[in-house]
Length: 435
Image 1 (cartoon, helix red, strand yellow):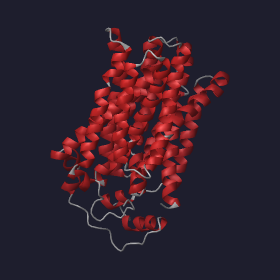
Image 2 (spheres, one colour):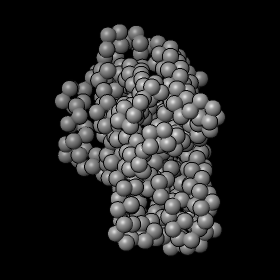
Image 3 (cartoon, one colour):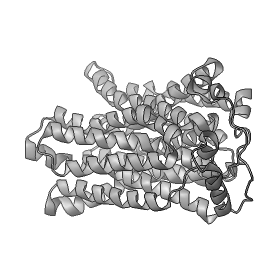
Image 4 (cartoon, one colour):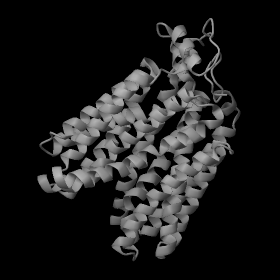
């Protein structure tokens, strides 16, 4: 892996870090917003979820544009949308205006975070993909920590709007860096053949220390490159639906734990401080799981690690369900949940791009993430509804044990099938250094 390729992956990580800031900073600004505008808890909840709704729409509607216009221009467009949303939030004057700004920011982030793993996959050797995707995954939690730190520093002095202004400035800065340095992908150039494709391919090959080519390889017929043939027809449709189920339960388990762990710990006898510790340990476990996956993926197949991670996540939820009344065991289970769910999610992100050919890769990933976002904002709401109807905290954690085991089984079937062998291979004539 050349310095040029490492630079591309590093830039994607930095983008993810800043977008983690953009998405999560609202959580730290919410109290100031609620106080200034006298918002109810329901209104604050809508503000917190508006960016998640935008991310779901962005993954479904904007991410597929990457397959049509190219990875580089698509990333620039999404960053611009994010920056504008953050900048408009600094001058918002009411609940609905800010809600629209958060929705706009979510649209940009959702479209982009579905495309960034595709870029990393296309610039990483196959044996390093899991590691690179896992390192990329650290951007979101680190960005959230950065958002909290900035909010603490600037909100007390300049008000909650200053947090959004910092986010806008950072996003504009990475936008300039991407415009100057992020290349188009080889796979896109070969599959879509824009003007000057051969010249651009040879420039990229040179930067990756690979020999130039005299002509581009043959392109498969259009009907073999379309979304219908590769995503929504026959066995491809079965595989796609299985991936949708996996993403739905992965994100549902993550956002349920993130949203409810502190409160459910308190509900079962822990102190307020212990409940907050549970939330913190959950996030620290997530960061540890992401880094652990990046190291283990150098020696063990990412698909194997991903299956094991989701089995571990199911067992961690089971432990939380059985021992929620014991604070020490529950806190240890919170660490394990964060570790295994985050490791499994990043492993899934490294596997899925390889299941689709370059011509529909961002579409396949984007749609899977869009379905996942449905789990992201429905699981916390469903948990609240079930609590109101008499469900216990133990039963809520127990409810996700079997779905997480199901996800592990689905991934094992997908990656071990004969179809995996064919679709994970590069398209005929591909020049990408992914073998």
